[in-house]
Amino acid sequence: MSKKKLNVFEFPKKFKDLPNSLNSYYIPEPEIILQGQIITINNFFKPDLCQDLIKSFETKLKLETTPLIKSKDYAARYNDRALVNDLKSADTLWQYMKQIFISNPYDDPQQHEVVDIFKSAKGLNPQLRIYRYTQGHHFGAHYDDSVICDVPPEGKSRGKTHWTLLIYLTGDDEFKGGGTIFYPDDGGETLNIHPFKGMALLHKHGDACLRHEAELVKKGAKWVLRSDVVFPM
Image 1 (tube, helix red, strand yellow):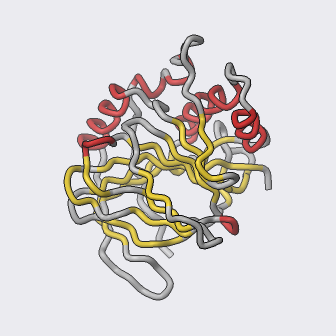
Image 2 (cartoon, helix red, strand yellow; image 1 turned 90 degrees about the horizontal axis):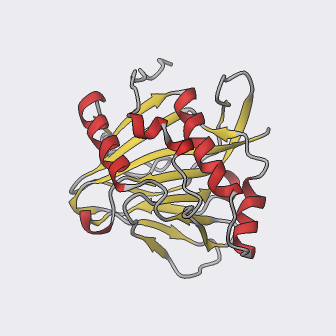
């Protein structure tokens, strides 16, 4: 099997400075949307960082369009994507995210629960994926698998992913449609999450993954930066 060709890419300065960017007077606050399954963090990225990333992705990466194929084993998928394998940048993102998890200025049981979920995590999957969904693009209902990967910053150990991390670089009214839709296993109400710009969404994957899909984009462009949270094996 041939290996995927990975892009050589350097993230912009604002991204590299993320671990030093948090202010004591405002720390993005995780919110549990569905117990043990879905967590969102509004204002995870500031709008100017989102714009810098989009500009960098557009000018420095070659995004490839996935063919629209559906079979009994794979959901229909139609979007543009690129892959950047970068241990250092994955660690930069993790150091920033870890501060948000650990910093809990609000004495809120929900925040303590988030800390408990991720306190044993080792980092983020260094395979950073960039997705662009424009008009007509979508990703049918599917499950995300757990994978075994190297652990940043040096890749000297390995771990297993258990949570998907999606960071929405566009949101609000920048696109129509394009929500991330979850179908609870218990037959509960379907959740359609239309993101705010800069919002992060974490959802459990692997054996505990909820079936979910990327809704058809009707107008505009949805940009997403994806990784996965890695735990000890």
